[in-house]
Length: 294
Image (cartoon, rainbow, N blue to C red; front, side):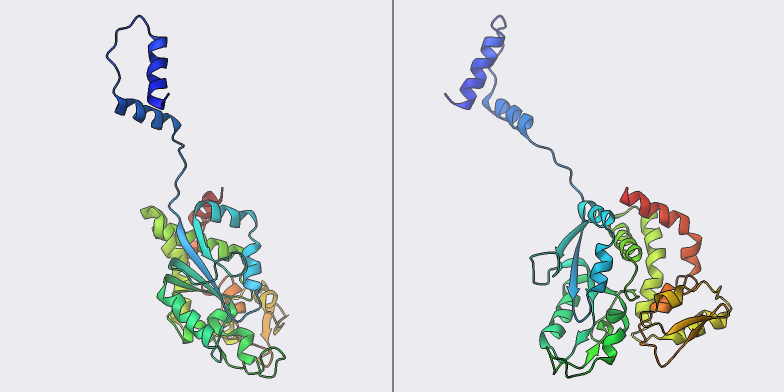
């Protein structure tokens, strides 16, 4: 006995007194399909990739340090296409946003090809961390290492490709990485108001990318201290990965011989590159980020 026959027999036994017109086969099939169809929520995610070049993997650790926030991003907003340490996919994919960690070893043909392919297959490229943005400590790498004695020349990714957004720091804070990911989603998929907020948040990071691949403690001197903006909070000293900054009489003192030009101090300064547009919209931006992560 087929499916349609069993359905017809059931209908006939339940309503013996009614002389209703026989149901059409197409209507019955449609009713059965509608009843059994499973409805799943559909989320319009953005596709994200993660290219890992020459670095210490500290930026990946900072990304993972978002814990539940990272799981929320992956569940609701981000389709992670590839990341060497967390996914099986090893080849660069076509994505909306690519995060790049580490600088490029120009002695390594594969690394040069990977960064160029990342640019070709990404709508937006984000340099994540001091090595990708400015070269960081890899600027001072020397040949003679036991594993790769020939690899001795490293460049920040902006010297080889166009970069759209910088997230400087060594490593960047987990919150900043998370916030940029949320704002990238709102910029691409949000409402008009959300896109305006995301634009204000991301503009300073885009301006950093436009300024080039050079950074040092002098940025802190010329852009903050010499402008009378320093409030002596010590964030720059805490962020410096090589302890080149000490607080003297409430102000930062920079040892230029120790500075590795990673840009972490200026990036961490609360009165640094984030402009007044972001400060005036702080509450609205924070509410949008927190609402997205609920």
